[in-house]
Image (tube, rainbow, N blue to C red):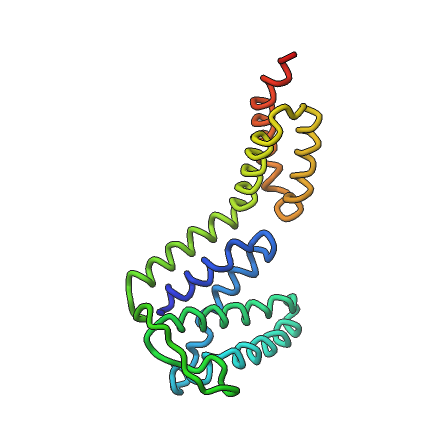
Length: 206
């Protein structure tokens, strides 16, 4: 794949984990997504020495010490391993064979699903990855989980009292707000309106 394709694939795969990993982790992984193609800059054999998990481990270790020296959280060095691993996995779907486990194994892999210069695949990956990043970075994933939880609560427990709703609201906030507290503060009024509207028929009944 080309640059937009690799960036998009990285965002598409990692964005759902933004609530756990953080926006910085995913964004930095997207920056490192083209690292294996440094072989083109160095003018060495393409997809030979930099398209393998050994290179991913060495590069991760190198950036670990660079980040420590620069005062950047060392844990972010794992973005290198994630980015290179995704790059390898995506390139394995293209036509050109390469050894992902070099130098321990010289077996060359290529699943030949699409060409690396397929404009539709590259553009599609970039667009979908960008949409996923914006969606999950804005708290969309957490909001979706909460809405699904609320819907199933009313299917399974239709006569839930207002007190139970308040307890559940607190549970939801404890489970999800610790990642994006400011996001949920903005959504608190919306949640309160949902609780009030849905609970009213049961509260008013006998």
